[in-house]
Length: 158
Image 1 (cartoon, rainbow, N blue to C red):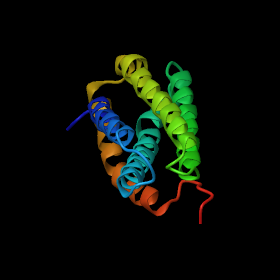
Image 2 (image 1 turned 180 degrees about the vertical axis):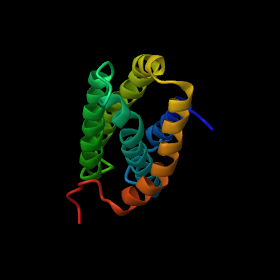
Image 3 (image 1 turned 180 degrees about the horizontal axis):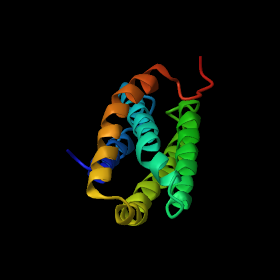
Image 4 (image 1 turned 45 degrees about the horizontal axis):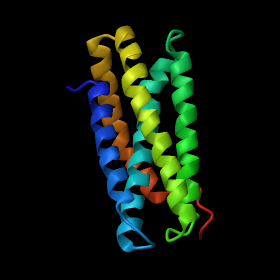
């Protein structure tokens, strides 16, 4: 069994790679659209499964509640930015600027989780609890991938 923190860090590394690949694209190309959509689906599923496993547990712990609330709020901000990106012409400078903002905010979020939140939570959770949360995340993420694939993430495009 793998603990929640190892699983989330592995996902974060994948997300960093995906963001770097998107940043290398230009214009409204199939490659950019496909990479962005794959990132949107992956990050949406990751965030939902993370909230249902790790954050749900943190919100129930008075010592970790503030960190949990902060991270859930940041998930909402990233989700909103992803929706705005979907509604912006990918060939425009506005899309590039919005993507850079979203990337910066997301990478800041995952760095903060890894450097501050995860160590604080690891002090509170037993190894068995961290592994149980990892199993919960592992069960939830495939279901959340299905939900994210079926969703347009609040895009205004029809």
